[in-house]
Image 1 (cartoon, rainbow, N blue to C red):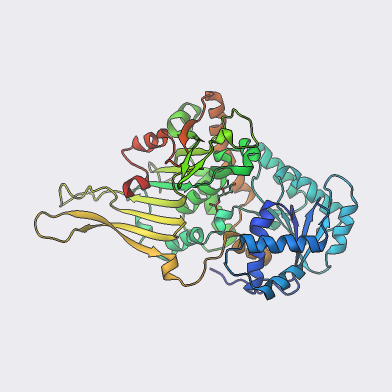
Image 2 (cartoon, rainbow, N blue to C red; image 1 turned 90 degrees about the horizontal axis):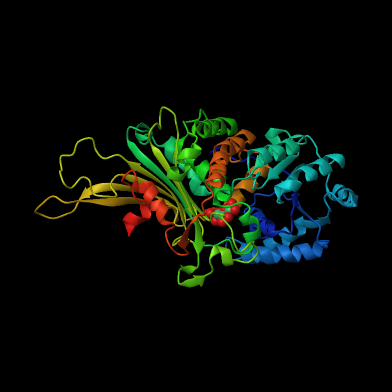
Amino acid sequence: MPQQPAPRPTDLVVFGGTGDLSMRKLLPSLYLLDRDGHLSGETRVIAVSRDGLTDADLRDKAASAVRGHSAVQVVEPDVLRRFRRRLSHVTVDVGGDPSGWADLAAALTPGRDRVFYLAVPPMISGAICRGLQDAGLVTPESRVVMEKPLGRDLASAQAVNDEVGAVFEESRTYRIDHYLGKETVQNLLVLRFANVFLEPLWNSRWIDHVQITAAETVGVGGRRGYYDSSGAMRDMVQNHLLQLLCLTAMEPPASYDRDAVRDEKLKVLQSLRPIPAAKVAEHTVRGQYTSGTVQGEDVLGYLDEAGGPPVSDTETFVALRAEVANWRWAGVPFYLRTGKRMERARSEIVIRFRDVPHTIFPGAAAASGAGSLVIRLQPDEGIHLTMLTKTPGAGALRLRPVPLELSFADTFATRSPEAYERLLMDVLAGDSTLFMRRDEVEAAWRWVDPIIEAWQGLGTAPETYPAGSSGPAGAQRLIGRTGNTWHEEEQA
Ligand code: BG6
């Protein structure tokens, strides 16, 4: 992948700068970028909120966040001291008292790059952008970073995009899907396009189906209020899972250039066969967790989590069968699955190859688990290629699927950077390859919206599943219709 240019002096302004995302992800990642020499000495981080903090308060809060959430065990005191000096706080009441904008203007340094990071709910993104423009803070080189959720359907996504787009050109708009910042997700492109042997097999002739899973053991916890108006389809499928599907299914781009890559992803989204309302019950499954035991700990059911209504049809699990209707993938099901409070946390892509066209080992060749490539995104990042192998021994020929394993941790001594480290570094360097373009986000909503509408039309409640299980029974039926099983079942 291209070399990053030297870091440029930047004023990074974080709206929602004292919020959860800032504390858990942004500040700890910025600390690590500082430690690893990826921030220019002059770069400053200006946290904006309505909290009225002093710079000293913010620096203390940030230091605890770095200690509590950093991806490395040891926080280096010298680096932390240097990092603290980069931080300041400005109080701005967006849509209220306008004096904060002047304070923000005073905190910015003329001539530096400006990055405005909107770690706020999408409905105030437009007001922030207008406030920045009215205060004369948007320079030609300014960039804006938008966090998800990017709308809750096509119409609201278009509205936010229009409002932000009235101030920032598309080429200066960075829409985060943090899955694209994960090392293993970027490695998917390298695996596919830097190794010659996969491409001839990467099509409907040799691939039977694809499974994409993002399973979490966590529940919705303190986010029930937000989550209840979202659900797994909007929270995970519309963005992370569809992006993984795009990277798996896209044609080779001409170069690793932001628009070449994003043009190919867009074509995949545009090729997704719509699931008609009459087929939604057959091709999709919604689930909601009830109380149960996750990794030895008793946990509440979704409806008992604080902060939401006692009755709710919001799904915490989705499984669906998608199809990419183009020459390469016609007839190959893409099974997508995501859920909270599942038995095990894991995100992976499984490519299941077809059986050989003719077997000379009758009775043995159909051994289950044969011929799959598993790209494990987290945890235990790695690649496993399962091959049928002869079990040693005399007597009848017996075949067994055996994985060839590439473990990132064992192969590379270095720590894999966190997704936000990578993405923040790219924003600071002005590289938007790993960010979603407006047309991609909108194409994803165009495919997802009718499914959500059909669910509402059906009026059925999600299937329940006990916390700590592998999801609702319907998910097994969904994939079972083609005689397949989800990947983990075979490992059991
Ligand atoms: C976020 C979702 O985008 O991704 C969360 O809003 C989810 O609900 C999270 O927990 C999962 O991210 P990761 O990196 O832990 O797989």
